[in-house]
Length: 163
Image (tube, rainbow, N blue to C red; front, side, top):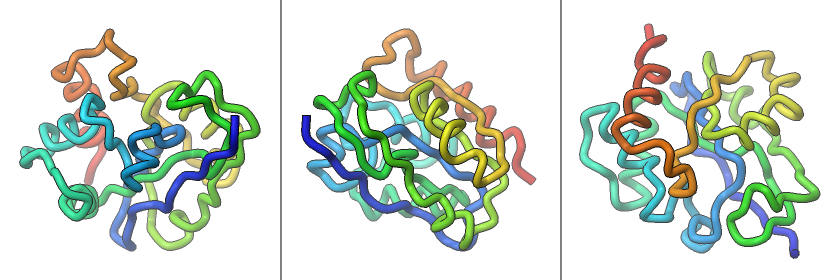
């Protein structure tokens, strides 16, 4: 395995909720942006939660996030990974979370799946002091959750505590 690198966060000073994945998939790394696998339900779920059109371009995806006070990143900056398999991650190096928390008033952290939750608890929660809410992964590998169920669970977490 060779070392792979993530890319930077999406956020602005108005971001209040930080969504963290584990590490970009092969397709996301090739595209240079998050959740690029068309089978991943992240963008469809997020659009459904906010009553928006499903974004196609990177600019539309950024706009959907920022217009709803969301920041998006991964818990790992770099690691050795076989393909897109979270189970194969070795040599994990966490992101410098202060890049986001030092510039935005993050009040909530939501993690996309159990791998992200594990690495967040180990490396980043001690720095942020914010306990993460672990939500079911939007990955196509998580076939136990259909889009409707993901949307309901993520929607409750995203909209239930705003204010």
